[in-house]
Length: 100
Image (cartoon, rainbow, N blue to C red):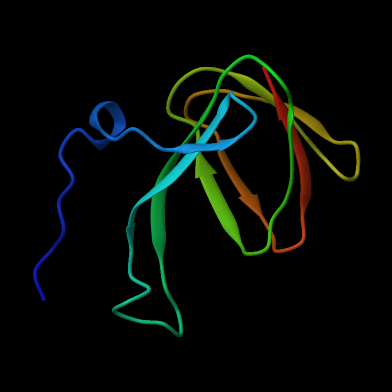
């Protein structure tokens, strides 16, 4: 099976609007059609100034911060300023709030 290559995805891929007028999320690739039992997806998320996003993960998720900063708080009250180079894991069922 050949590799999949997405040149300049960080700057060229524009994720669709997810919530409010300031939250964008979209998959660049998902292996769902290739392996429905254990798919892997990769996408981009963008949060702009505006309403906080309150979200409960219905799946396991990892995020790598590549640009900008935002505040993220989980249901335990732990709050972190996410910065470029940071990596987050959210287990299925995790409740978070994100804001700039």
